[in-house]
Amino acid sequence: MRVDIISIFPEYFAPLDVSLMGKARERGILDIHLHQLRDWTHDVHNTVDDTPYGGGPGMVMKPEVWGEAVDAVIEDGRAARGEDALPRLIVPTPSGRPFTQEVALEYADEPWLLFSPARYEGIDSRVVAEYGERLRTDEVSIGDYVLAGGEAAVLVMVEAVGRLLPGVLGNARSVADDSFAPGAMANLLEGPVYTKPPVWRGHEVPEVLLSGHHGRIARWRRDEALRRTLDRRPELVARLDRDGLDKHDRRV
Ligand code: 6GU
Image (cartoon, rainbow, N blue to C red; front, side):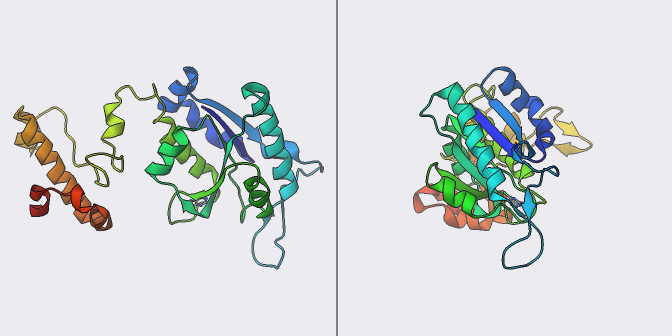
């Protein structure tokens, strides 16, 4: 997968050199290209923002700079990927549609993603209007809180998508068992996990996990997942369809 990121802080993405994402890049599974937005300014101050029409606080990022940057990055990607290739454009904004595991799975199927994280009060809305006519363009939010800029949201999304790419995780099972992954444990939070030693500072590992009884262990894990989800995210349990709950679930 090719990933382009255009930002006034390309150095913000240093964490993508580390750990799982760093390995995925070394192996050529993730091909990340960072771009400095200011490279497409023409004034001596490399201005990327201006005051908002209609007044109000803060600054808005200028459409001309973003337009030149996105056009150039698309041209660059096409030189590498073919003249018909087009990226999916992802515009991080707290006013976007929620980024969920379902969206991460959808993005993991794309060959080319282009992220445009903004600072200040966001990007002039004509940029999304313009590219929305040419590319699949999504305005997405990673949660109901406000960040100082979209860069941290891009890190979150690249990591959520990157770990889903074939060959990135050692154990493919761990993706299937994720909280929020489709399947038997869909919409349930993962329950508690333990490793050796069997007793630590007087805290014991639940006996069932030492029993070797796979049926009882699976049932226990599902019960714990249900209990934890009821406690922390009751709205997720309400979302489980009738077929998503068995007779034993209803007793939990
Ligand atoms: Cl994508 N950007 C910013 N600035 N704040 C956010 C966000 C994005 N998602 C949640 N909060």
